[in-house]
Image (spheres, helix red, strand yellow):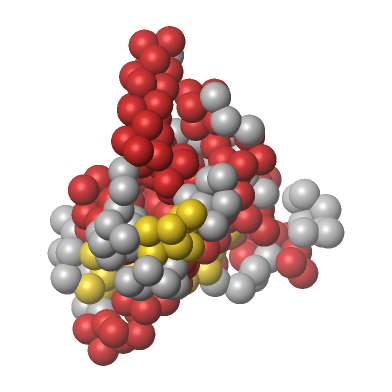
Amino acid sequence: MEAKKRSFLAIFRKNTCMKTNQKQCIFCGHTKLYKVSSTQFRCSTCKRTFSHAKHAQEQAILECFIDNNSAYECATLLGLNYLTVTKQYQKLRLMLIAHSETLYTEHTETFSQYDEYYFLPTCKRGKPKYIFDAIGILGMLYGKRIYTLLLPDQFAHLKNLEENAIEKETYARYLNQHKVAHYESFENALVDFWYFLENWMDHFKGVKKENFIYYLKEAEFKFNYDKEEQRLILEKMLVIKYV
């Protein structure tokens, strides 16, 4: 951990120094800038205002995000405020939801396989009494990439029943026998994604149900793209956010 921290700090300081000393626009690359404050510059060509130091910080946080560091780990590695990192992580996850929805719109007619899946954290997995805490997900496959949808909570009307109520047992059996699924082959990316999601979510040591969608879409994105592809997509989206 200490070696990793030193490595990230070195990269962060180097990037901050480079970005602060650069005399060019972070958006269009032109060098004709004028100062608008002690930390901000405005490009005379594209007319955008920016801070080299803030941009370097966001790039360092982005690297942590791509490297699967939690917000706490990122803050520790870079010596930044935890809330600062959390806000940036949340911004990135909101961007991933938008990216996912765009792809869904473009590929609505091309989904070839789908599968219904119920997610439970490791501590509850395999224990029948927790089955109604599961989060329903519909996974769809286009090419070798995944798109996911959260299903409505089908268990709300059962959660207040006694643990051994016959309705619970009956519904649990029904779920096992009536999953929505269409596979052309059992060797496909959907099966791989469910394993990836379970292992990846374990890293976070518990996620509130209302926040699950953000982590699901992050997992979807990181399953679909390698790290270099992730970096290119997110950097492009960050630039668009500035406009």
